[in-house]
Image 1 (cartoon, rainbow, N blue to C red):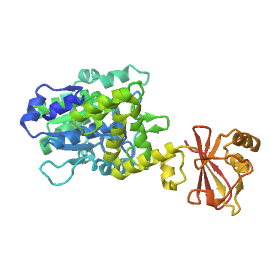
Image 2: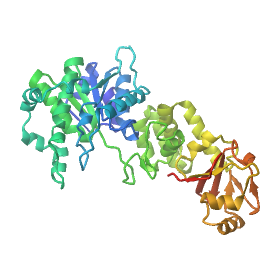
Image 3: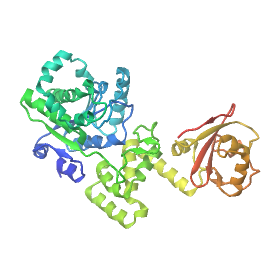
Image 4: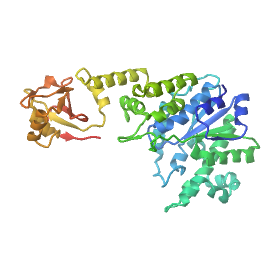
Length: 430
């Protein structure tokens, strides 16, 4: 199967320029996608374009990642209802370096025949003067054509309109395409479907100034079957940085994929073959409770982003939680499993703590009386074990690694109590 055919069966072609399939089959193409450095980490919403570049490289073409250190100082209006807050140069530079490290897990930046390149468009955009830009780029675009772009029209229909700064973004992205064409012979730009207007503007600029033909391919915007925004959960965005989204959380995000989305996401976010995905589709329909497709999806994507060890740790933690006995888990594993639950601290006490007093002071229950009633009803667990005696005393050696109690109230409400040397304080998270 050729690259375009690979993209097509995976559902990755939302729109493309005429003749692109023949070009990809006939020539070694250099292609680029731009990423906005507005944060220190990419998120799962960025995975589709990342995977598109990785697939392109696997088929023998040359990928370029453009991190918008220059355009990031402006802000892309595409898909946005309001203008973004502008970042400082220092913020953008720090984010660019962080994204470089993340992208190296997917792309080969080595010295092969088609090594990936990472470019920061600040390199050329910050050298442009306003007069040069208006003379050499602006003269080739009519205001009428720019107003007709979907991203601009949407903002003009709103209450706040669009600033001249963001209105100019389309011209800057078009100039990026021209610069990459001149430097590396780049003739293909890819991106989300909301980027079509920006991409065609660059193609037009290359045609006008260089008399050459360039191409565009846009990917579908990822949605969920329930209509919610992909990559957003109750606890927020799912990041690729393990410090922002722990690997266990990351694994669980994919494992909890809706049945209606699982096969689609396997096509989008894995390298599994058409035959393997078809088998998983059949198995999931036959035994939906086994979640065959979701489990494979969670394994594949977690392995890509965080490595094999993260997959093993996530699955081991899930199995331990399912069994209900968490006493064998380490503190670091538990903090991954419960990254957003409320937590509190209690001062170290060599002789321990009466459990009802600890529950009340930690905020598990509003009072000692309520703690007593909770224990008598059988609804309290500490480190996975039911507490049956309201007169029980917890001691430091009962804590996991002498540092942590995991308290569960009922079926789902968890709270962490950390033992520290000092005055007891309370700190809630999540």
